[in-house]
Image 1: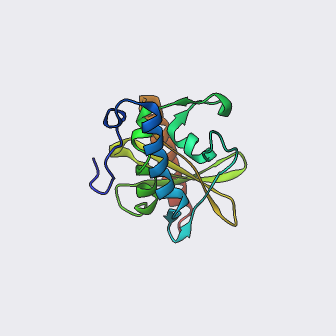
Image 2 (image 1 turned 120 degrees about the horizontal axis):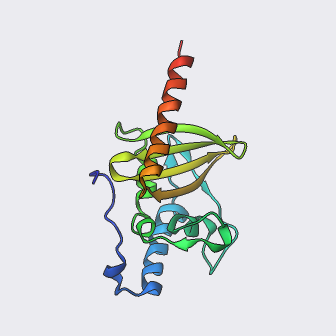
Length: 164
């Protein structure tokens, strides 16, 4: 594990009780995203607060769950464990081990930060006048790794072609 990443927050360390674990995750989230915003290369990140569900911001639920249908996402324990990694990756994005690229999705540029060695990705939406923390996730499938590597490689090749 990369030495600047925080320790994982394990379910079993919270009595294997979901309510206790969720509360611990939410405290970590508030520390990292609510009380003090993460800063990406000099710009503080905003986050998606609504819809509020169970008294918690949309970004919290997006970080700890996965699925295509926003209303029916499922808790993902690998994401949960790594909740503190999101801010750390954003704030260490200029380190050489972090792969960064920009890809267009839904008519906006999305900045991708990939810590390949630790299988972790953060996505930031560039909304022009501000940056919005979009999501963070653990990469746990080979096809995801191949897709990320392809996107990164294509972006790097495009950057080289555009360089003077």
